[in-house]
Length: 335
Image 1 (cartoon, helix red, strand yellow):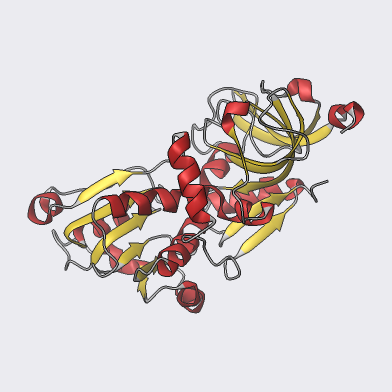
Image 2 (cartoon, rainbow, N blue to C red; image 1 turned 120 degrees about the vertical axis):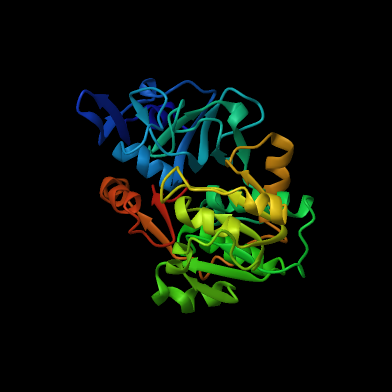
């Protein structure tokens, strides 16, 4: 790869902070503007997550220091590397490690990444497939591995998935169904019921049902993955069976929820949080499973590929809950 190609200017969505708040706009940069790292990438895809949209729109304090390029995950091609583990042309993945928060992230046509944050793509998955699975699929894998370590069985009852038409929800339905579990999909978009059933859901629950305020609901679910928070999380806790488990992975409806000790005392339920960062042994293990027995059916996932110029408007829509499925910023073909 020529030094000229590496050094040429590129576009990125830069978040800056002023007294008026966070403003995000596309700027033309060079590598010298980026945070430090031993490996220079040409970005191929950057997944757009709810957290990214909060950062870009300034709706929540996500970014650790400004200016910053947001984007907590990316798939790209190595252009140059000072680390012998990576060579020009390698297809690589980065997520976690404060990417897009304390380090410049994926909403940039070029990235400079610490080598310790990078991994080569798992065997058997293309760059587009890895990007489509991305942080949402890795989050589901972390939850499922913990469920199973805690004794979840395929015949133990259904697993409830809230926010079912989002990227986490759709990937969770597909992955859990393919792994042999029954899945109950909770959605405020009943018009998407047919799609959720095709993904593998065996039951569709209108999100209006979660408005109930009974101290305990009938014990319906062996486990739940909640991407919503608020009243939905409370309802799911009250709806778990004895020794049920709940993985809290998102907060689309807010950070707070009204809880009761009754599910914990009367049914001995467990609740734990998931953040899509993991030590390397677990990270590699889960990506191997995502390429293998936990591989989702991506043919039915609603994958939307947008350009960088479309990202600011899309971030507003997704932060407001108007997006469906998985959105990727597509920077063009790998060379």
